[in-house]
Every structure is written in structure tokens, then in C-alpha cells.
Length: 500
Image (cartoon, rainbow, N blue to C red; front, side):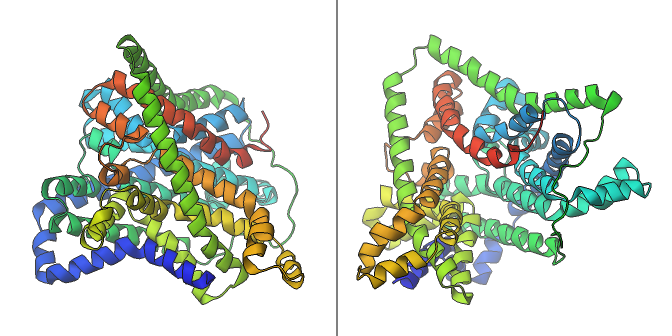
């Protein structure tokens, strides 16, 4: 039974890829060449690759640089700076993009798109870099300095190689998020494959052109996943012994303290203060225009209801896969678990496009209904639930279930009275992560939400697209308030042990 459920979950996660493969087979290679080998597609490819490469480079420099300053130097107020470096994650990228374009309407260029996505996503590199720096053995760096290496040489030859896996993982997250980003880039009017797929869908209602563009987008995702694995290599970076249970001696900045503080303040100002100030300005404008509190309350209620339903469905789907990955280790369990990660790596617009096609062709009555929207959320956010459920299963001794069985308890009784209570912390953490992700999800919701259904993200999108920033501000503020707990959760473990 568990295997059958896990297979069904994997099939759901693979649905977008199967949809693309079927569409390619229906169109034929001649049709694919006609739709893909066009000057417009080459332009979109150039725009997308340029933006992904540029944002990854900028995020790596900002993330690694900030992590080194916070973790390896005698920076004043390191705890505060750590929180401020992670705080931009509480602002959805499309909110940040709207804030910047409202302040600087001429920002609709490659430089503007690069600025916005880099400021929104550099914490994805910062967090794993800080964690990696805290886990390295300080004796290696001290030995290198004792051999006469300069501070820069120690960073380049000792610290940077140990950050390789963490930085590559963060860079992959940045690349996948930029590749899938729709709201911010649509606001900035910077065309990429994701914005083009949305435009094609709206213009031709899921015509072959939109599907083929989605196929190219999936190929780019797969290229990124393979590239990260190849670049990571097989070299090990773990200690062979216990190492030194102490923190390394912080580097004194001396005369550089002032410039470093100014640089970090500038980064915080651009990534956090400017968007928050814009939201505050919009909110005051909205207050003077009499905010529709009833509409805000209704939209917030709808968002919370959808997020709660998605959290429940997704964690329920994750239970079989997480359990199988721990209790029945083997090739089948590994394949089924990894399949869910592959499905979530596909951009939301491709997932939505696949579900639109399947619902129209197979079960027309489900088109633009809540179950289809919940299926999209499950595909996109399954790994967030599986990771926490699997961790809970790892920490749950199987002997409890064996004892209950020896006492004559049936399988459903053991599940309800023994297994689920033991897994409750992991299930709750996974549900919370999915809940907070759904609150700010935009692309799939725009395409799949039932007619008349408004979430905080879609209401913000509708108002800001019409340049009604005062009306959009309350929805953005509520999204930020609901996203703040996720930011605290991400930074909490790394923040422990940092000294002021």
C-alpha cells in the first residue's frame, strides 16, 4: 500500500514532464523545429541565459562576501547583520520588483532586472555559505596563516574550496528561482521564457507555441541540475577526525571597519529598506484612499484557506514517500523520492500549463477548480514536506510500531495511535513550510485559480499591474507578515552561536 501511494505521488510530480513529452510527440520534430527555431526564441534564450548567469554571479559575490564578513571577522553587531542579510527572503520577488519599478520607472532594462532578482535571491547563497563556514575546522586556516599565507590567500586556497558544495547549492537555487521568476520580470517588462509562456498562454489559450517554450524552459532546468552535479564533483570535504570544538579567531578589520559597515548598510538599504519604504509609502496612499478592509479580510481568508488545504494535502502525500525512503531503503525508494524533487524543479508556469491541459482533456469538470490548484501546489512544494517528514521518520524508532503490532493493534490503529504522534513535529514543520510558500505563490495561482478567487498574491498583482500601488500595499504587507516566520525559521539554526 505504501509503495502504491508513493508511486502515485511520483506520477503526480512527473506530470509536467510527461505533458511536455506528449506535446512534443504530437507536434513532431518538424513542428518543434518550426516553433522553436525562431529569432524570437533565440532572443528569449539570450535574455534568460544572460539574466541567470548574471544573477548567479552577483548573488555568489554578495552571499559569500557577506557570509565571510559575518562569520569570520570581528564585525560589530554580527547577529543583527545576520538577520538583516536573511530578511529579504520575507519579501516576495514580485513585491520587490513592483517597489523598484514604482520608484524608478526607467528600470525596465537588463540592468534593472539583474538588480531586482539579485537583491531578492542573494540570501540563498548567504545562508549555506554561513553554515559551511561555521562547520569548517579552524585549524586548517590557522595552519595556512602559520605557513605565511596572506588573508586573501587563506580565503582563496583554504576557505573557498570548503565552501564549494554550499555555494554551488545556493547558486543552483538562485538559478532555478530566476528561471522560474514571472511576477518581478513581468513588472520590469524584461522578457524571458517564463514571461513569454504566460503571454502565449493568454494569447492562444495553451497553444503549441506556449508548450514548446515551456519545453525549452524544462530543458534549461535539467541543464542546471546536471551542471550542478558535475561541478560539485565527488571530492569529500568532511573532517576525518573530531576537529577543534571552538570558533576561529575573528579577523580584525581595522581601518576597513567603516567601509565594510557602509557596504553592508548599502546592501541592506537596497534589498530591504527601499522595498519596505515603498510599501510604507503605498500603504499611506492606500490609507488616504480608504482601504477596502472587507476585501482585504476576504482575500486574506481565501489565501489562508487555500494555504491550509495545500499544506494538509501536500504533507499527506509526503507521508508515504518519506516513510518509504527510511523504512524500505533501496533503489525503488530512492527513485521515487528523487522524482518528487525533479517535479518541483520545474517552473510553476509549466506545472500550471500541464494541469490546464490534463484537466481540459481528461476531466473537463475539474478545469479551474480548487483540486487542480491544490495539485499544482503539491507538485511545486512536495520536497519541503518530504524533507521534514523523512527527518521525523529517521528519528522515530521502528520498535514502537513493532511493540504495538505484538500487542494486537491493527495497521490503521498503529498508524493513528503510534506512528502519527511520533511524526507530528516533522509533519507540522513540513506543513508550515508549504503553508508559507503557498501564501506568496503567484504564477500557478494566476492560471489555475477558480474564476473570482483572489489570493493576496493575485490581488497584489492585479492592483500593481494597474499602477494602483496604494490599493496593492495592504496585500503586500499581509504577505510580508505571513512570510516573516519562514525567514526566522531559515536563519534560526545558523544564528545560534554567533557572537556580537
